Length: 158
Figure 1 (tube, rainbow, N blue to C red):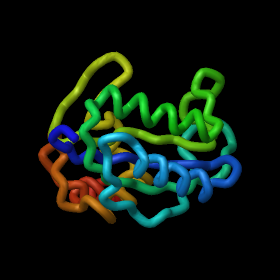
Figure 2: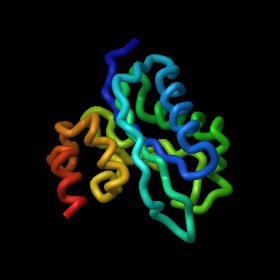
Figure 3: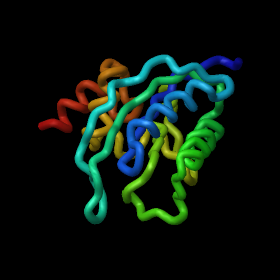
């Protein structure tokens, strides 16, 4: 394996067997080539944020160490979503979904490419992402904002 980068992933589900989809995603992350699942948060339940009436979400976060480059990791996350029945092309943005996997942080890298922005552009605004992420990465520093995940969570709660 190449030099491993620590990456942080947000997981969410509000359709079907929500907990089953999250557990399947944790297993799939652990099974990625050149990747080790280092830690995972507890699962929390949150209100949906998005259009229309939606069911409540189960949310979690994971930290991995990976030799995959960011684009390859993103492609792997999208493939895991697809195996869980997610059809991105046919779904409304921020609508209900069987599984949502977002690449939040990739080491301390800042990436702005078509279809790939790291750190995740809404990371610091979303309590449903920050709460589980803080369980496993409270002291990790956001590479653009210069504040820890714990500090960002406190700001989001205010």
